Amino acid sequence: MGENWERLRAYNLDRAQAPALKPTQQGLMEQFGFPAIPSEELARIRIPTFLIWGRHDLATPLPVAEAASVRYGWPLHIIDGPPMIRRSSSLPNL
Image 1 (spheres, rainbow, N blue to C red):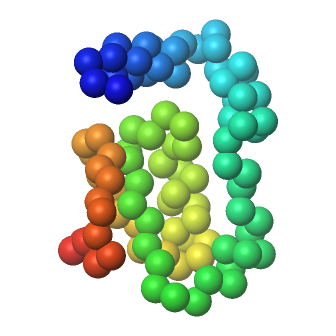
Image 2: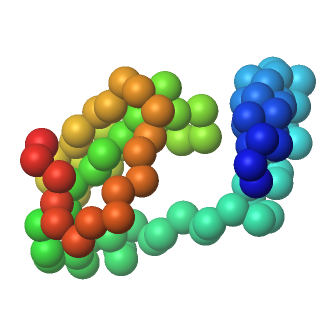
Image 3: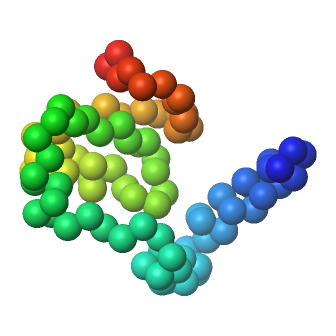
């Protein structure tokens, strides 16, 4: 997206933080976002699993990750900065 990325990012962040738009955003997420994975399916995961969560995630607050960590016994690693996308098949050193 080149130079347009920063403008698009700033606009979307501004709209995500507008309290008056929260009901609309929630409705859009329910219609077009990824559906929640049923708890029964999450409980069946037997391979080592850990959560990496942004402390200030606007879409899904930290208490959701904390509850999942406790419920499923998955270690939780909280990051303070912006999320990073890693293109690696190896697990990060936590």
